[in-house]
Length: 440
Ligand code: ADP
Picture 1 (cartoon, rainbow, N blue to C red):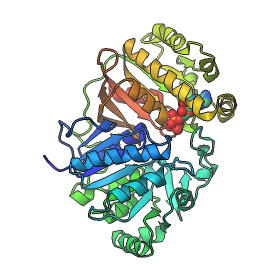
Picture 2 (cartoon, rainbow, N blue to C red):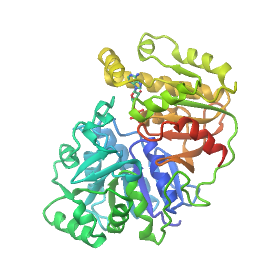
Picture 3 (cartoon, rainbow, N blue to C red):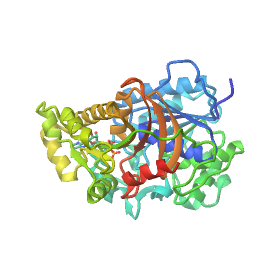
Picture 4 (tube, helix red, strand yellow):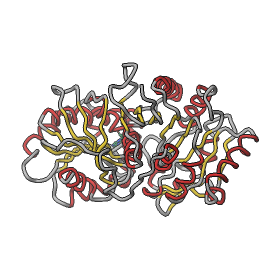
């Protein structure tokens, strides 16, 4: 069996396609699986495998167990380096899951070469996620001043990542600051060694540009575990003699991102309440395109909102008014009001479950091009559709590629699916996605 260079464990499904997208762009043939595959080996050859979990917001003990199961399977595939993919806005709570999962993976890899130390680096400069002096910026503002402070499940109110991670692990957390990163891979490795000698097991690493990511990537050669957002992935391929990163929305290595031609009807399902998604929903409405709102309070009272949504969508699909949008996306104040009545977890679950059933229904109505907005939402949709594996296609915006998938629901359809992390994509993303697919 050919050796897999990189084995990846992603803590949510949009994050997984985001990572796979960057790996494909950097020249690695990449396969993404939904959950840990049942068979001992994949029937396809790949340089990198991304196992997508939905473990970002589940209890830490469960996230650890699932991540260790993924690790064991990836090591069976011969993966030489393990990549734990976390959110570019470091979504987590003081209870985890980034710290506990990183600790457990490090412990499990104790016998592997290059073990005992790792980084934590969610930087993704192409998507305006930069880290300086350990502080995460989203665009021009600190994480704690960004819309992420209102996230329904993982509100991020501290931009100091060393402090955020330290709350999640008993081991000391260090920092490799930008002054070191700018001096290149040798300086970074020297700092890794110095920190490790002081008992540090995980260090936050500054990065404000793709050049920084290339330095960091080179410094990670041979490290058993890398904990990072998707950005760091662009610097790894050079360690295996591959180095073809392209930037911009047209990025993609020639053969690696080819998908079969798109067919069927178009729809968008959104359960993200992030600011970028709010703008995208507004843009869709401003174009006069059809939109249906899923009301969490109606769901809670047992109203069959799913049936209503599908009855609304049926005559509008393919009616020439543009893709239909079915969404629970709401402003922070509205989300808070719903959460005050239902609790955050129950509200999230109700909405995710409803949107997932709507997505299954839409496929039943002939939708074959589907955009899903929201990480947790995407996880619920992908699971409901019974998707096991995804082929990565052209990039729509940084971090969001089209994929081609086969469902086990609705008679086993093949469809094109784009999973958009809440804060990714320009305001015209929903329209742009379908144009990009038509031109692929
Ligand atoms: P993002 O990628 O923007 O973080 P997610 O889908 O990961 O989006 O998370 C959004 C969460 O908010 C989901 O659990 C979703 O079900 C929930 N949610 C969506 N709309 C509402 C709403 N109107 N009120 C309360 N919770 C909501």
